[in-house]
Picture (tube, rainbow, N blue to C red):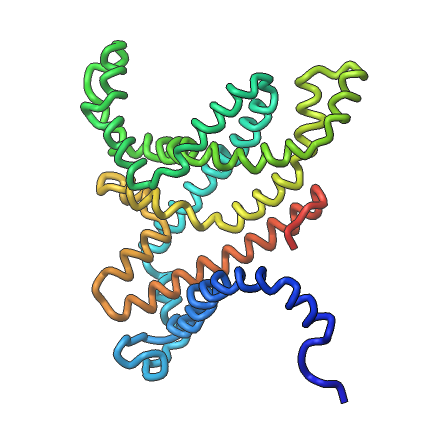
Length: 310
């Protein structure tokens, strides 16, 4: 009969790397506390949850919470806004770091290159609360943007940028790009640094200029990184950026600015106990759709460029 427990080889390795396992303990505890234990709350989705009665004492209502979510006009509006904003960010902000990384790679002055990288990376450390405050101030009636436009004679009256529905989405996409460009570029710069120098030297001998080297050597070497980040971004397409949308939202544009995440928060803070289950159902919908999109994007990437996560 086979004995239960670890083999001698496993015990030897655990003893050898015991310090590494000790370092993993805090991360494991955090993962269990904040990722796995909260999964027990999924039962709330199928209940008319009452905090006093708890999970065991609350009434089971089946899929009633999902019916209420899908029949709500707030859901349809917030889902549409989420898809529009995420799609715009995917179309504009996803290829931008790739192009920026290719341009940075062509810089020969290393000091200037590092300076540009540092400047573009710095906004990533600033919270959206501060970023929103900065851009609200710059785009206000007395802000620097309006002052410049009026000085140049391009407008006679101040433009209320943040209250213009036709300007709101471009502002959202631009500010997101401004904040995330430097950080997103790091992945591609790191991938470029692994390309053998011999490839470029061989291309030079064959008469390839810097543009052709970028197109036929650098860019193909980024396919695996591009595929990985594309899969992750498509999988999170229902996450349009809660921090940004919550801080840059206002009553004038709320009907086009409310996304699923902000709708969940407004539901959970509405004051009704029953809305806890509605918020949980909306959150579960996001998770399931996100997983499906992730798997589809992973399959498409594997078929097209033979790169995938799973």
